[in-house]
Image (cartoon, rainbow, N blue to C red; front, side):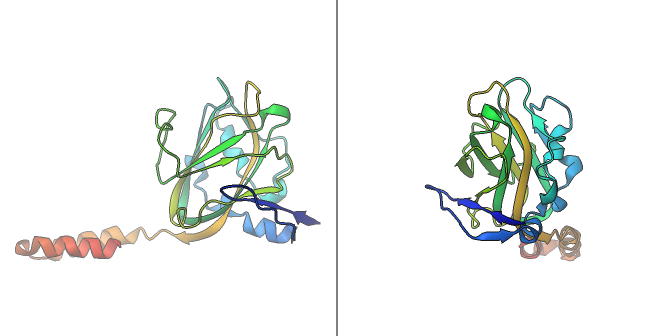
Length: 211
């Protein structure tokens, strides 16, 4: 069955009327496989651990059995660590019915374990959201800004007027590269191998290796 997408960028919306095959969308929106799911947190969720379940396969996006709903007010704050580095290109959100759908989305790059005390900081990008219960609206982060993401924070500050916010699905599209964790070990070894009287060179070696 063909899909029909609308693309929304910054400073207005662009409508993409090309019909994209479901198989292509399923392949594109597979970054959920690269999320360190056990470490995902969702602050202000009414049911503990429910926030993890909105990151699911494309063909399960309409599954209404699993969702997250806010508790004390309409805010939700997701901390999403990846298992490597991501170039984030697209986000699709399926929100709740009526006024429970989020009306704004704020993205923060590489700021791990954010809390509601931290969200007064400027977001790396913000989107005004449109009610979408079918997953047809795609939001496009600035690729240059989100080209090397190992941790993504998504803040939904408000909805369309309800007391609580509900989200069924968050789909992420982009490119993934494995993290090279061995580099730190190599750098440490090279630094220790340097003579004591060449400390400056040792640190240069570390910086070069990390970069």
